[in-house]
Length: 142
Image 1 (cartoon, rainbow, N blue to C red):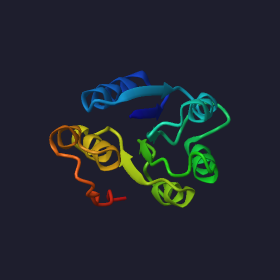
Image 2 (cartoon, rainbow, N blue to C red):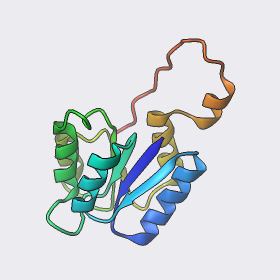
Image 3 (cartoon, one colour):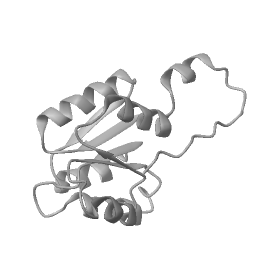
């Protein structure tokens, strides 16, 4: 599975990259809204993490609205990961269509929980037999 992180700060990117790879997924990165939009259209990842404040003309809110209005992308879960969580940022992100909202600094356990929530637990995927049963995932708190 592929995880795209749209973020301009290298230290944040490195942390999420390490978590994603440790969970057994491919990591994609875009540094701003414009390159994020190009990556979305090209790769159509399985999970998206996005910061709200990005350099350039397209911010995180714009990206969320773009994703949720695009028929090829709208089912991809979008997780906001931002330090810009004061005021009405969380409500505005929810209205734009985000599926989960996390605050920076990123808590490794929370990030892992969200990845497993949307992409499955790699350990369970490897040890459970395929018996046609579906698993119900609990919603991530917003």
